[in-house]
Length: 173
Image 1 (cartoon, rainbow, N blue to C red):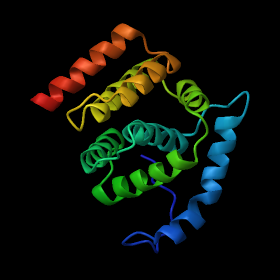
Image 2: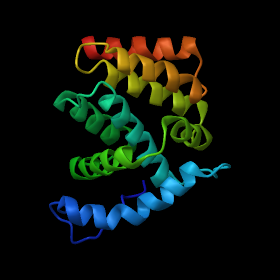
Image 3: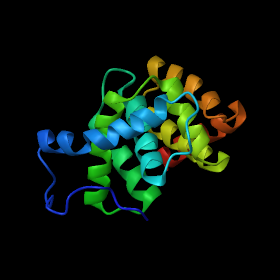
Image 4: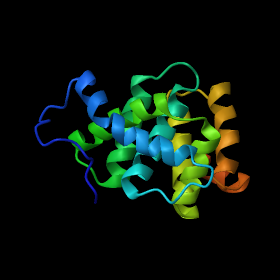
């Protein structure tokens, strides 16, 4: 699996200022790809960042990014990409910065749709539902974002509903 791009000297992670300085050019390239009128297929590392940033965007949709949502994003990233804890933490931190700098959700999801298969997009929707349900409440803002994102990712309403049911079942079990 591709490793996040960061200097080997970051043993405990960089300071936020140093991290922003280093990843700024990486984000600039991804932002360019996301805002291109005819985006090319995203490389795996950019697709990871884009998918993780979409998880963060959903978690922040209600104006409250809870520790439980952050933990679930970390677990999803760790599991989905077979990362160790430190790698997943670094990726989540990058995703949080990317989400804050990302273009509108329409362009963001279009690039993701073009980058991943339908089955992977279904898995993304399931992960998004897990984040939306993480705090035990279905907030109107999160529901609205899910109603917008699923079709933009090309995932049908019935498949999104099944993904929501799987996510809810996993959280109860």
